[in-house]
Amino acid sequence: MKNEAVESKKVHFISLGCPKNLVDSEIMAGTLMKDGYQVVGEADQADTVIVNTCGFIEDSKKESIQRILDMSDLKSEGIIKKVVVAGCLTQRYKDDLVEGLPEADLFVGSGEFQNIAKILKKSEEGEKQKTFFNLPTYLQEEATPRVNSQPTHRAYLKISEGCMKRCAFCAIPLIRGNLQSRSIDAIVAEAKHLVAGGVKELIIISHDFTDYGWDLRRKDPTRIDSPIELLKALDKVEGLRWIRLMYLYPDGITQEMVQVIKNSDKIVKYFDMPLQHINDDVLKSMNRKMTRDEIETALMNIREHLPEAVIRTQFIVGFPGETQEQFEELLQFVSDQQFDRVGCFKYSPEENTAGGRMENQVDDETKQYRHDAIMEIQQNISREKHRDFVGKVIEVVVEGFSEETDLLLQGRFWGQAPEIDGVVLINDGHAEVGDMVKVHVTDSLDYDLLGAVVTEN
Image 1 (cartoon, rainbow, N blue to C red):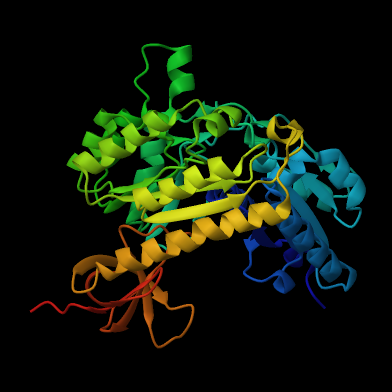
Image 2: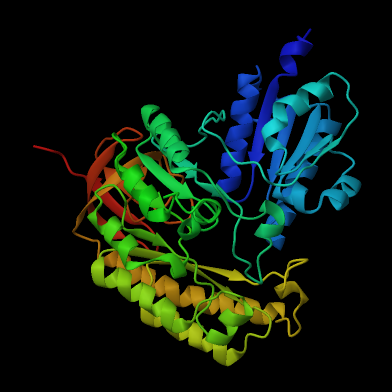
């Protein structure tokens, strides 16, 4: 007979959406493990499954609902005992979700996830309360327990919560609240802790890196917390090899920031800069607070001082009122700029956002056409850019075996972020996971590179 006390301590996580949500899952895991719970790798090994949902766009919402229903099926089959629904979708649609998903046992919003151990314990003791919601004001502290779910050589480092911008297409402020920045001291302390555990690459995440510290400086003008000072502090962390910055809005990419990145041996020359569009009228309608001229100035600043930089961006097609002429301006811009990486989203109307209330919504067929046209151009650009790597030697961090075959190793060079960019496939030579090796590039694909480990003499 199974020991019920031990069995009730086994928890499995399903974390959906962005890396920021993943860090929340890691905090929940750390909190539960500190309280005696065991985190297991498969749902059918667990007693409780926590689905940390995403509520950003329609496709992510559908995926979240489906995973909740899948776990509810396991519960009805007696394989697991409890389904907990947490995260952004829960926070955003708390009333509808509770009513529409009676199969779930607990609902934990993004303002209460840090109390997951207390919530589970009370539920196991028979408490009937099913919903746990609060304002999303929780900010990770230096002593917050956290378990890194990534390979030991890399980790995400979240520097803030919420967002001060109010883009017309985005529901993030409704879900996550206003900008709340952690102090530089707290961020650096966590960075040192992660590096001591074997991390070589820190991926800095927030909703907008370039706004970091604005809220702290507003409350206390004597504070120095800013993107520049944070970069300088992280650059001094011993043992750290790569610092990768994500979500840099173009309005905050100053000449000083570019120089700090240029002068650092640790900050990789990788700019993840969501532009969303280039037509001035569409940008204004999106409430983006930037013009085409200002965007082009930011790009010129990067390329003038860091010609080797990899620039990744994303665009939204089919925003309400986007005309064919405005789309063609965007299409030409993508062709002219020759970005290294481009993501493209078909606009999804979101409740309680300015964009969702706009007239002149674009039909799905037009959105699909525009999406495909953007990605076709970018595929050709990517193919040509990857051909330029053939014959060169690049530094690669080894991630493990290829997802396609165990006959090849897989890694990333500094210009590739995990999960969203391509990979370097290694077809000759030996290396261990986490090793940083030199790879001679021998061939290229549309989004990936192939090569062999360079053996030191």
